[in-house]
Image (cartoon, one colour):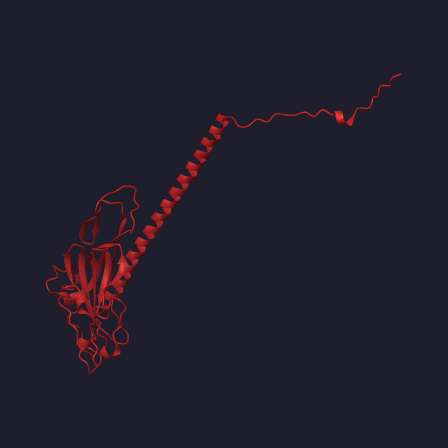
Length: 284
């Protein structure tokens, strides 16, 4: 007789296999399209942010150059006519001709390099606007030119020295080649760059006609008619541009720079006008 077992063999277990399926071509294309939209959005946002950052940086540099230009010019021009308490008032406070050097005590020269000054340090109607040159005497309190160069003690005001050796000369002008505001100082052997991006410089001189120490009219260098010793204040205007083109489109703009209209080239540079008025304390 044959017996039938109810115990299943452990090796008779049936294992089910489930088939795997990947992305379809359509699903893959949709995923790629979504990725491209996201990438385009991120790129656009980055470019816009980068552009805004460059524009801010350029305008900040523009403002810094305008501020520095006015600060240095105001400080130097403010010394115009200074003669300390030991010398007679200067009769020629502005440089209107050639600059010469004098030998100081001990053999030093009062002007290191006369060749760095413009031939006419105070003039207007130049292609880049005006130029200005000022004179003051050096002592223990005031002894530097526009570049920061110091007048040696053996050249400074002294009862035993002629005042010619104590004269400090400073001239400001715009260099068209690199669009910089430059200074030529009697205590420096080369011109110094004061500010970048400066395209035009305009100056008006406040003239006291009736001797009451107040400005009666503002005129340019051409119309001052020899009244340089009657100048009691100076108005300064500079047109400064950014160092890189950042505007969306090119355009030509006319700027009012004191009494002069200045038209910019058709480009994408940002520009701004900076002005100030300097009272000549030594003339009041």
